[in-house]
Length: 102
Image 1 (cartoon, rainbow, N blue to C red):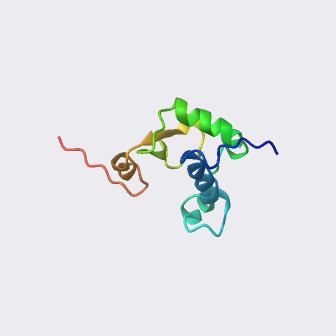
Image 2: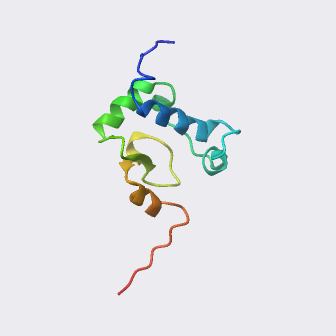
């Protein structure tokens, strides 16, 4: 396995590790909301931190944002992920109810 030497140099690396843990580690406290529901990480990201890293910075990553799936029923993949504020995250949950006022 090729080492990239970036694990301790960025706060992004733990985001990558946690994303995979939620999807593939049945002992993770959040697994029931992710892996148990069939949410996966695309092969490109799951096996290659540098690909995730490059996507993240190209997609506007900064330490004040968190990884958000645009379609909460979809997987972690470049076309379904973005960097969002905590407010945006709170409004993009499976239990969010939208009310249209006319």
